[in-house]
Length: 68
Image 1 (cartoon, rainbow, N blue to C red):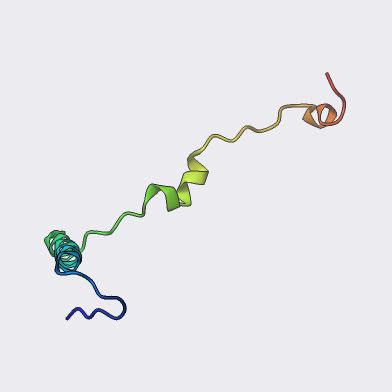
Image 2 (cartoon, helix red, strand yellow):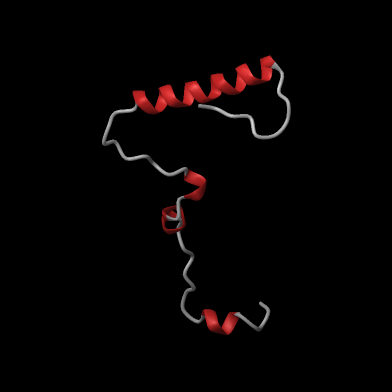
């Protein structure tokens, strides 16, 4: 059951909202059961580990302060 808590939607707005809810429910039910959901790439903390780290070379400490 869907209940409008605030506002006064037009019949078109209510139909659009209901279409989105029904499409989402159909997509969830069509997904194979037991298949893990993959996290979005932008929020995946493993992406930090995939980037190449630029490690300092020998005598890098000497170049941190003195120019040249």
